[in-house]
Length: 181
Length: 205
Image (tube, rainbow over all chains, first blue to last red; front, top):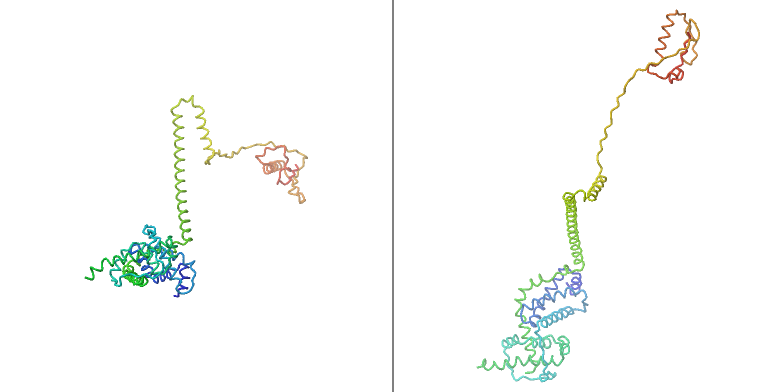
């Protein structure tokens, strides 16, 4: 079934179409939620609420070509994940002017990155760092968009991104000598 | 290393890390679908229908309960009133409770008035009694003739004349009188011609 007709059927509350939509976008939504929340228990709650909102609001969704539905669903899941994090008070931001990302190219001293170590460190990152990093580096949002989404200033968004980078680099550098020996 | 390259590496790692949770995601997929509130159950129409049905049922239950409660209360109060009445009547001196007794009697009277009863009326059976009445008949003698003219009816039949002896005439006269004059008649003033259904007979002696 094409996306447009799927949307129409879902807006008529047809269970079969809703199941089709759920199957098509479940995995993408789950990965998205996992990236923000870090565990599948929270991801389950967020996905349940997200699909509820999708089925309720699909009647008002305006189809603007292929990919628009995917973008809409992604936005809904991200918003729901952020709402979840805010409810749990996991998003605590502190503005630090010295760590501003001024948009210019910045260099790190290390060139060696161990993927397993980085993956472990990403898992250890505070929710605030991970959220801003996800929004900026993975979703491609601008600092202005991130600031609006998280209800923070653009400066805070930039500093959170820099902190996230520093968090990984500093921990990698402290571990690398031992691993290289 | 440029920050953009670093970000790219971290981005790939994040995406790869998320894809490693697919197995867990597939395990909870069905439970999420089951727990998703089906939209049909959320439709406003269904909710209104359920609310209306629930309201009807609760109204019936409350109404029924109220009626039963009221009925019980009424019967209890009536019983209590009756007991009070009886208690007062039984335990108080009659002289002091004349008014109360009157009220009781009034109540009873109203109760009896309202009811429809079968009334048996005994009516005495009247049996007819036959009494014999003897009338005295006066016959006027017109002429001393030896013949009898009999007018049988109004058809003007020609009279026949017979020659009869005195004894014969007397017998005929008696037999006619017995035949035409009713024994039970006590109307002496009514002549033969006035009696309905009687044909006029004229006897000439």
